[in-house]
Length: 286
Image 1 (spheres, helix red, strand yellow):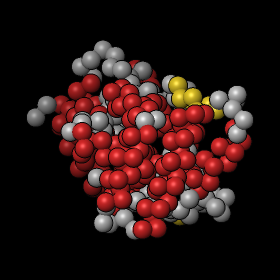
Image 2 (cartoon, rainbow, N blue to C red):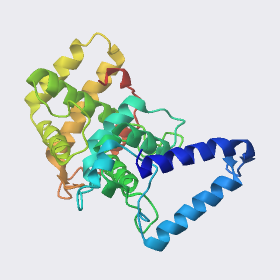
Image 3 (cartoon, one colour):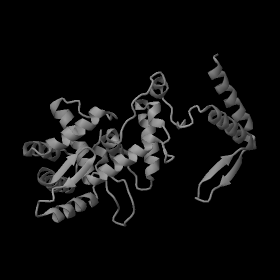
Image 4 (cartoon, rainbow, N blue to C red):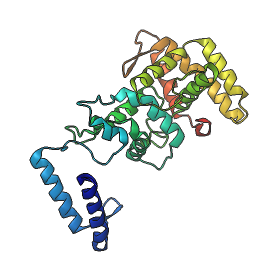
């Protein structure tokens, strides 16, 4: 047994032996936690030693995977920028959204599911005190809100990360591309530069009326989707693609309206209306 494994085993034994000293505490925010004096002293000692030698003091140790451990052999692995998370997190929300869950819980669960795609550089604690990958996911959420693929607020004016009907349709459209064209575009939820490029390639392909027609034919043949939902999909997809085709300029992680068009405010209103529409197609997401 090497020294690392010996220390880990010793710590595990120490924690188990100290559990009977735990105190259950109710916190002011309505949550509960266990506190333990002996374990706290060990945590404090370990943290102070790291600070003394300036080792790993800016890394969040709560996320671990083989890819993270292996990345320590690289001098400086490249962290995932915010745009790499956009489509992957959208798909995760489409599969897992529940109105009672807070955004930080989604981020934590998303990272647990995709931790094998991370490196130690994704775990750097930035000057704001937040972990880099978590901050970049929040930026990706902002981007999805600009595209109105994720709703900004509920009809009760509460903040939300609920996928909009457009968000669900975007994910379904990529699934359709994979099945119909034997494509590998987003066949798996991969956090990568290629994934981000595919995301924009897919969105741009919505500018072709023939692609829309074929996609809607595919949707309308589905026997699981209700007639009411099919009507909404047809209505909103045509509106959305018309707006994308004529009036929205999408660049690297930014979206803006072409201010030269006469109906900019009306299009903005329609986009907002679409983003607020209640339609949940999670049961169709692979």
